[in-house]
Image 1 (cartoon, protein in one colour):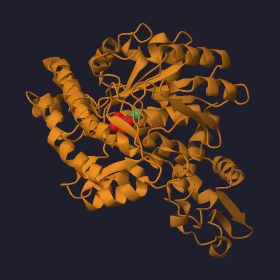
Image 2 (cartoon, helix red, strand yellow):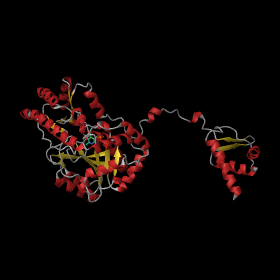
Image 3 (tube, helix red, strand yellow):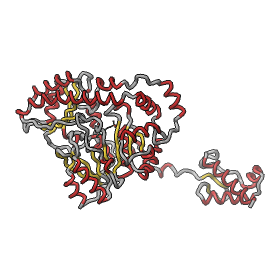
Image 4 (cartoon, helix red, strand yellow):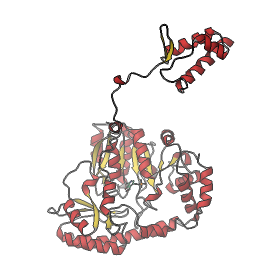
Length: 468
Ligand SMILES: Cc1ncc(COP(=O)(O)O)c(C=O)c1O
């Protein structure tokens, strides 16, 4: 037993010396007898250890010359590599990122911005987010909390369960904080689907999701949207013929169309998901930005089969630079998500502490109330101009929350061409093709009313109206 232990130790020691480069590749190893004397072990022990290392392919012997550390293959056998070529493997990162394109369109700070789906400075600054936050105190706590649970700040997760207010999500263990809802969507997608798989997606849909799905090599099955939200009847037909890995939906104040899935369709969608065993990824970014009336409950709140993976974000109710979103789901999914999130080791503790301090001050609800009213007023100002354009052949529906008007242009007006002329006059917006999986001629533009102040909207809409 003792001999066996010693032999293992010697083998391990030799292996370490080779693998750590102490005995470099190609170098000659000491003869057995000399090494045995140096290490104070029997020659036999060294013979056995060398034999094992030879069997492992770490060393080789040359007759009459001794043993050597296995050299690398001769240079001629290796093809020269161009590491830059290898960058094209894995996810398809060559697709144009429309977010970057939008940013470059807006370019100069002075552009009137109907393109960005975000709250706008005038609303965010009034949130008083930074007031009363003590960065030094947060720094001390964040430093101590570097190894926070990978799911994120415990009290913040508890707060989220209360904010969600549904019986399906009651414990912080069912919630994970993520870097914006985009990370939540990216991790969820990577867990549920592999390149080449199909997923069912509302079309048009949020371009950040489109870009992600396409970059990951997923095949998109488009499900049309009408004034009641996703056409669940079309989805039903699809599910009788195919098995997408999941259904991605923005059921409340949809981006870009602004529509909300009716209660009847919510039940039908959940029933289909239960029947076919297909999970729903519910992206609920705009839920809290309703006007006078609250929207129907989230799919997650009606989810009896545990099939809904719920994603939301603080980007729209506060500001996108926070990069704070979350996933709420049942525990088996959360287990997988934690393993996935661990690949980036930890979570952003500083900003989670900052958000938690802010929420504790109790001004968030007041901010949200104010923001809803501001956006509703801004939507009304934009709508006044759109109404005046009805005789020119445009059409749209008045949103009941969220950030967007989805406007159909008269037949003779091309969205791209209109955008080109608008940019010349310093107004930007998104064209409808950005929200489709294929570049095609289509009549829509998306006008976002959240970013500009009322006077900015007046000015921008006057310019747009003059171009139509
Ligand atoms: C439906 C939807 N989901 C997610 C996002 C992005 O959210 P985040 O900034 O949290 O990544 C957006 C932003 O436009 C969105 O419209």
